[in-house]
Image (cartoon, rainbow, N blue to C red; front, side, top):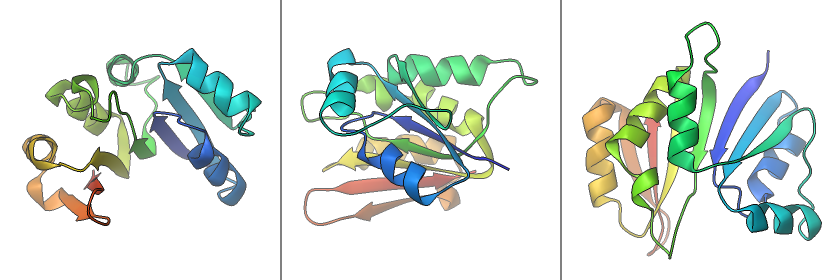
Length: 154
């Protein structure tokens, strides 16, 4: 049974490459809005697409909402969603809106998890997660002085 992973934000491709190498059942879909980022990851950093790893050129919010709106018979449910999207050093509204977080909840498999890099400030984002997931299913972890990760589970 495949372990389905959705990555919002490809970056250099390190995370999908790590998952591909160390989780042999992982099927990894990455979403990245910037064609240049994808090109750099592929040409300079060793990222490769194959039958288990794909990239969609799209905005994170649009990609999540499209997946959430799919008919139930065709909807993909993810075991893990990793969100690492930034614009100008901040989490953009498209990756922090209530619509985005609701969409994430709606595409999680039973027992699925979301991890979102919140940068250095999680307050508003954490409040939004609490409003959409049960507060008992949401936590924030500070990694050093400038990194916060929000964790939510279905």
